[in-house]
Length: 247
Length: 191
Image (cartoon, rainbow over the protein chains, first blue to last red):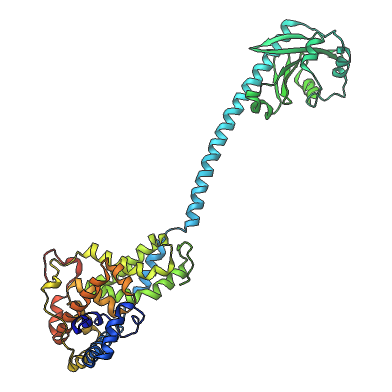
């Protein structure tokens, strides 16, 4: 490296010492140590640089600039990332909630329509079919149980679809589905209990639904499910009587 | 500034600290580039505005200073447009003349504003690295990154820039002729 090359490099060497550990300057600095003329040139060059640096450090920003920056920053600063994410999650949750509510309303309406159909079917069948108490083996005990005022209908009735069929219970078609009618008398009033295996495909609809009561001009019906069977209980008595029995 | 690498979305206090730490050197750099106080102030404000709206994207707080200088310089280039012809390095006369003692004395006798005027008279392509050199805030790598040029180019421009500055310091009374708002500088205008 000749002195011209060393001067080129050393002209970038700052007098503050900031560049002391920068390997780019090592060779040129070593050369300056050994060459008096180069050393003198470096000293003069750095002296001028130091003066300019000192002068520049005397430049102060105009009054009020800091306050303007802070004020501008305050109004322009974006919301914290976490909050923006929180907002996005909130929006997502809100949209899920809307979808959920709409689905629930839609499902609720669908369930209610199915319950009404079942109740109307039971009432119509009762009117058309008369009374058919089963006479088969084991059915007498069942009829006593159903006639008992201690029985809670919406609890576990302990029914077996196959046993009911084998016991001579009347079988009817509710749409495409097979139902069994179980007629029994309690306190002089005839009741008709229709039992259908619970349709799993629409299970969530009925299983989670509340019992449904339908009052008609000359009869009343209650519909519910226990997850295994879908029940429709219908009688010519009024709604209050049926509710007392069902609930 | 803390060294944590978490998001930089800042509280008012943290933003205040960032401004306090950097706005003065940024203003000096901006004044050197823009060559008048109003535009320099605007540049600094705009830089912090960009920080306030986009700074959170920077993951390393330790790079905030370099980011601010880089943003200010890019903003200057965007708004002000480089002065038309930039003097080619090859066209310049050799710069490595010995610094006379009387030059140092003269510089000492000048006030800060006059020295700034002399600096502002240096061609922009040399002025930006020269100012960053004198501000002494950034390493060479950071200066190179800020100006988006190799370190060798930074050094070369420094050498030429210093030659122009020394020339201007000898005759500071002429420098005021060059002071125009940078956003009024037209393409093709030479300084």
